[in-house]
Image (cartoon, rainbow, N blue to C red):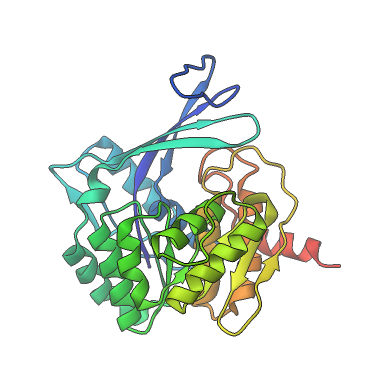
Length: 313
């Protein structure tokens, strides 16, 4: 199960990212399906999961298109609310030639998703769920309700704190597996008031310190994604494990984190050990960045397996 945002992405590919107050001309516009919840659901479905998506869209053309695209991926969208009084979420994305991006989101219907809608959807589907993946581009009460319901039912819960919000702290008492990126790990450590929280930089050493600070406050596993540097895995009673990256031809990093989380949840639902699931998720994310748009490069299970096989000595 995935609980999270459903957006339409308007993507401009430009010669470089604009600075504050600056206009950059000459870009190309493309429209893609987006939203961290929907993207992760697509990644999980392509990796072999049967996926139920919980979220909200507006009763508009963007919402109808978004749901049609998700159904075409084999995703069950019966738990997605269609709201008459809110617009479907839209993300405005600029991507440079190196694949780096800037993103601004008009959340729309995503912020109208209620805790009761989430509880109702999870109550029906949790008995057959292997993992619940939750992201934070939705209303804070919906995030907390999803994490609480999953953990109360004894179902593995992954919380991707992207972005880090005050509501994340309320959800952490339930013990979800956290998957921040390096910058988010620093923000989260600071939010939790960790005495060892770093205040700047986002390299591996700083992310390691942040992960330790988070785990000390939550008692739950932490996985920190490091982009082109792989990922860090921290579990209780174990040393921090670095999962190395797979070489990648980077065209667009949009959606790489969603790919990682969708594949991670898929592998955990199948019973993989956490570090093994992270390795496969890292491979999947490296494959995704070779294509433009958040979803176009999301690999199927066969492509992930093939990439893993060729990487073995």
